[in-house]
Every structure is written in C-alpha cells, then in structure tokens.
Length: 290
Image (cartoon, rainbow, N blue to C red; front, side, top):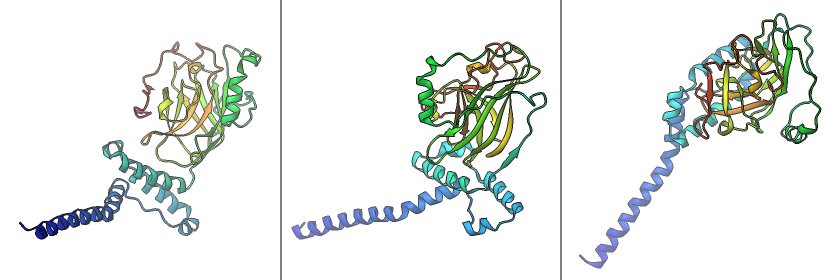
C-alpha cells in the first residue's frame, strides 16, 4: 500500500471519529431532554398565563403536576445525570405552582395554652444558642400532665432556594398525646413534601437527617396546620422538625430543637415505645424511605 493511500485512510478515520463526536454533541442534549420529558411529562404555562388563570384552573394544573410526578422507581432507575436534570426541572416547576393555603384551628383542649415567644431562627442564631446553652438557666419545670406547649422551634431556610419560616410547636393534649402545630408557616413549594421529626440536630441534607419519624404529607406550604404524633412517641427524643422532599431526598426547611423540652415518659399512652414508622438514615443512603 502506497504512503499516499495510508495517509488518506488515516485522515478518513480521523474524520469519521470527529463526525461521530460532533454528532453525539449535537444529539445528546435532545436525548437528555427526552429522558426528562418522559420522566416528568409536564409543561408549565407562561407566567403571564398563570397570572390571569382562574383559581379552579390553577387547582387543575396542580393536579396535573401531581399526576406527572415521577415515581420513586422511575427516579431510582435514572442515571445520576438524568436524575439531576429531572430534579432541577421538577423543583423549578414546583416553586412556580400556586400556594396551597391552610388555616386549621387550634386543636380542642389546647386553646389558651401559653406558648413561649421565640425570635426567628437563622443558622447564625442557632449556632450562638448552641454555644451558650450551658450558660442558660434551666426552664421552669412544666406540669407532668395536662395540656401544655412542651417545646417550640422556628423554621429556617435550608438554603437560598429552599426557604421556610414560621413556628413549630409541640403540644401535649389533654389525653397525653402530642400534636405538632405550625403557625404563620410558609415554605417554598415543592414536590411530595413530608413533615418529619428527627433525633438529629444541625440537619442540612439527607446525609445527616438521622433517625426520624414521618408525620405524613405536608398539608399546605402556607398557613396554620396540625400534625398528630403517634401515641407512645417519646417526643423528648426528637430535636428537629424537617420539611422534606421524599422522592429527591431534599431538605426544604428545619425548625431546630422542637420537642427537646418535653419530659421523658410524657409521650402519651404507650410508655415510650417507638412507632413502626420510625426510620434511620445511613450516611448518603438516600435520606428517607418513607
């Protein structure tokens, strides 16, 4: 084979490789987009259309969004890159969805119960409080029985995108069982948000979520709402309230120290035995299995 022919063949081979590389570069965004569209088949209306959309249509849109949410199985089957793309799109759309408002009344038997006033929580304030905790006088012992606000925490942002505010108060009811109540509450809209109480402190992600109890789906991202704590729960073990996106294992907001002031053994009718819904996370092993 002549030298000239070898050069031509070699040049042709390089050209084929370059063509394949360029072709993949051009096609791969379409492939990724298709994966995202298949996993989350939902199209968000333009902002102008949302602004003039009747309330009934907004509720229908929210129902469509909920129906389009990928299942846990679908999410787990995606590659890390595709999962990140789907998560970014779902979170972006969820944040633009209409707020779900709640205004549940104070549970029967708790009206008039004194609740301590606390400043809004921030990471810096929380760190300062933790550093000076040993110098703070012990609180006045609360009654062993009867209605009482046994602990309180103020919600703070998880990060610049996932924001939360308002109070989370743990009440002991007349029957000895506990209710977690949110007031003046607001959190960034998100997909499949749940209310957790965790035994961990300083929670920033699923990596340090620790052992927790899932109190159920978040009823609304704005307003006053109540969550029953299973009978037999020793609430003194739980140190943080967490608003958590289960499918994507994302912390949206936390209220530190809620539940810490409760007396051990005052967890209602059950003597402190942990309910079955308690979960324990292990490092990066996907924050929640609830």
